[in-house]
Every structure is written in C-alpha cells, then in structure tokens.
Length: 106
Image (cartoon, rainbow, N blue to C red):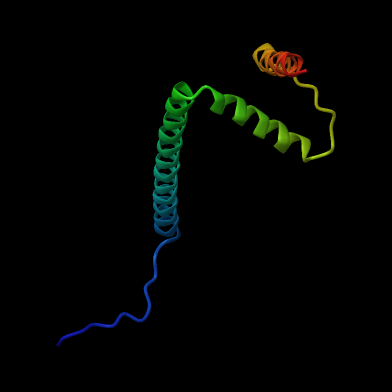
C-alpha cells in the first residue's frame, strides 16, 4: 500500500474552535512581525534623512517648501506660515548687493 485517502473527518466543535483560534493567533503574529519590520525600515530611512539634513541644512528648507506646496494643493483651507528670518535676510542681502552693483555701473 502506497497511499491512504481520507474522505471525511469529523471534529468536535470545541476542537474546531481551538484550531481556528490557533490559526488566528498565527495570523496576528505574522501581522505584528510585518508591522515591526516596516517600523524598522521607516526608522532607518528617517535616520538616513536626518544625516542628510545634518550635512546639508538647505534640504530642511526645501522639505519645508515641499510640504507647503502639498498642503496648498488641497485648496480647502487657508494656509498661514512663518517665513524664517534667515530666508528673508538672504533675499534682502542679494537685493542690496544687486542695487549696489547697479549704482557702480551707472
């Protein structure tokens, strides 16, 4: 004899419930592992982003402007945001140097 075929198996209701509970626990375990792996990957990416921002501070300003663009595209609210003084002074300094350059050429 090389094979046995089982056509019908009857299990008690309590046994079926226990098997279903065990299967549910296994699904929850897998879901928690997948979630934890996702959190780990997200934290690694955030760490990499933090390192890049630490090396290049202008990336933070670019990200800030990108976020403002995303929020403004929704068009369902009023957006009020502060402009960093550093950004304003940078434009003022450029404007002043451009004006002084025009005066010397006249």
